[in-house]
Image (cartoon, rainbow, N blue to C red; front, side, top):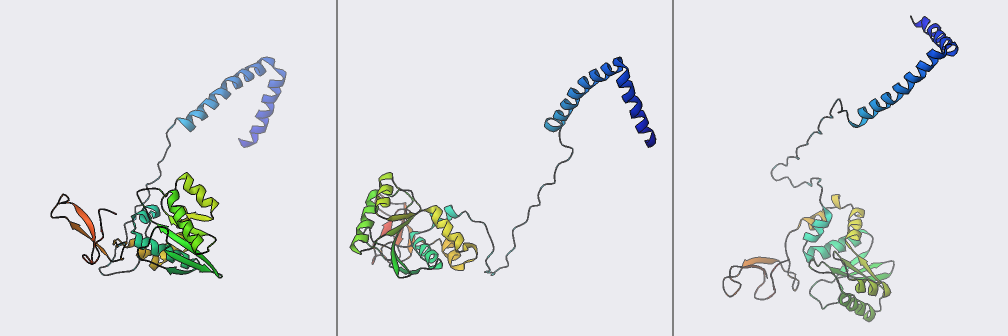
Amino acid sequence: MVEAVPQVAGVLCFALYFVPALRAAAAWTACLAIPCLISFLIYQITVSPPQFRPAAPTQLAPPQVASGDTSIIPRVQWLPETLRRMDWFQFEKLVAVLYRTDGYSVTRLGGARPDGAVELVLERDGVQTLVQCRHWKARELTEKEFRNFHRVLTDTAMAAGWLVTLRSCSKPAEQFARRNNIALVGETGLICLLKKANWRTNPEIQALLDDRRKFCPLCESPMEQRTATEGWRAGQTFWCCSTYPRCLHTQEEF
C-alpha cells in the first residue's frame, strides 16, 4: 500500500499538467479549502473550549506548633504595614540594628529631646553621621523639620546627616534637604536594609517587628491603655505612662 503512494502521486501530477480542466478544478478546490482550514484553526484557538482542566494546586495546611514551642516559624509578612504598626521606640531600635548590621558603630541617644535633635550617631572608618528617626503616621515632613535638623548639623560641624522616616516630605522640604546634604531614607530604603540584614532569620529584628508594646516618648517607660472615669473624656480610652504620676505624659492614640 505504501509502495503505491509515489506512483499515485506521479499520475496525479501528470494529469494536472496535461489536463487543463483538472488543473482548474484543483485550483478552485484549493481556493475554497485553504480559507476553511484557516477558519477552523482560528475557531479551535479562540473559541473551542479546552479539552482538559489543570488540577487545582494543593493547599498546604499551616505548620502545627507544639505547646511551648518557641522556635521561629518561617512566615510571610507585609513589611510596609509591619513598619507602620511599630511603636516609635521599636522603630528607633530597629534602625539602629539595621545600621549596626550594615557595619556601622551605632550609639543610640534615646530619651525626649528638643526638635531637631538626633536619635542615633553612626560611625564607620572614622566618619560620624547623625541620624534622625521620624516614625510619624499622620502627616508628611515639612521644611521646618529639615531646618531644625540642619541647625544641629551646623552646631556639631557635621557635613551631612540622614533622616529616616516612613512618611513623605513636602516639595520645599525635599529641595531644602538636597541643598544641605541631608539624605532622606524612606520606606523603600528601610526595606532594602531589612533584606540586606536577612530579617527573616535575624532573631533581634524579628523580636522588634513582633513587639506590640507602646512606650512613653518622654521617659521610655511602657505605656498603659486606660479609660477616663470623669470629666468630658469620661468613657474614652487613652494611653498613659505606667509611671504616672511621676511622668504625666498621656496620649489619645498611636
